[in-house]
Length: 474
Image 1 (cartoon, helix red, strand yellow):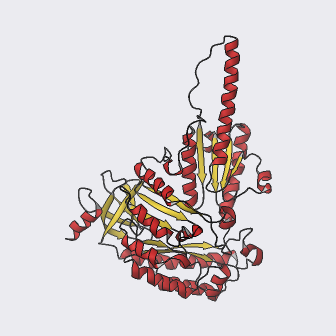
Image 2 (tube, rainbow, N blue to C red):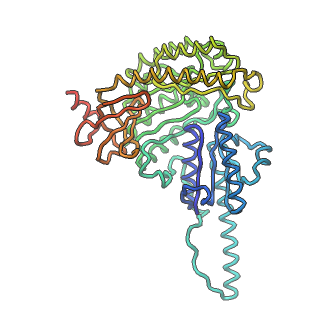
Image 3 (cartoon, helix red, strand yellow):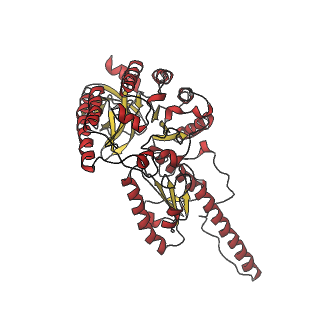
């Protein structure tokens, strides 16, 4: 029996798909690259942008033909297109979908497959009894069927999918689901529900399981990750969780995203600075540089608040890299208001900016109450202007690394070069014949561009990075 999981969207979706794959393998399924060859196909979906939603509907359309030829194929639609409960119109539009799965859940599909396995087992037993009655002998099966009575793995103990086992160096770990903030442009709260923080002991067990399987870096995920624990009254939940995970032997690195400016406390920043395994890398969106636009977005801070936050982050975490998100073309955004966003990005010189054009999403406050009055052409012009600015800013930041030693965790290989990331999440390529996967290597940067850097490993033997840096700079 074979399965195929197709994923689009955020890191949370990536983590959800990994968990789904692990559950399917526990039931006896094995991965296949081609959806057409699979017995179970799962589409894990995103609705943050219309373009992503259009891709999903295109995939569903192509699978309809495959399902017609193979009616026993199980198709599962998962994620934010489904939301907390599938809309009747969605079910009616795609009758060839067998099961609709809310974000971060697996049981609707695994329960269906287990029920089918039980039915098949019951039919097989009935047939065997009938055959025995008539003294008909038959051979054994091929052993591929899942054992529905097998004990389920705990949330923290799921093994990595076989196609990732022994190769996955960095993994995503959700720590808080849903969101309570309800920014006017965002569809996520209505699709993923209210905030629900996972217990810290469950998260620790999850991370320990990943480390035991070869993972060396985890990225803790949440729609507003720095609100971890707020739903049970703990305003220091994330700092204390970081301390707990920092003590895990074998874990090299910890990251977290995405934060919100209103909850990026000094306690959290000081904890990042103090813990050796927590990377000097903060993701905290600004979204816009104009106060009226921020108010209409319901972000809860001003442009000056964000400036002061950047100052605090840089003062408390030496060498930190700060990433941000920006939306251009929000309803009513004037040329002057866009210029304010351009100016603050030029002023703050952040290490990365994820720039998106506003996309009106059904059900959001912006879709209900605001006119999407910025043309697509103007949105693209503004996006390109910020992208060009950021290319110059990041090129300058990265250029300063040439000649320096940086600590790189090797995550994989692209053609003839190893690929890894620095503590500040900068992409580095290293040409080296040795087996470096999963190792932390000291690399001297020889070339830097805005999107990546190239370097050479510091010595002939791979040693712990701090030892190598001390050796190279002595």
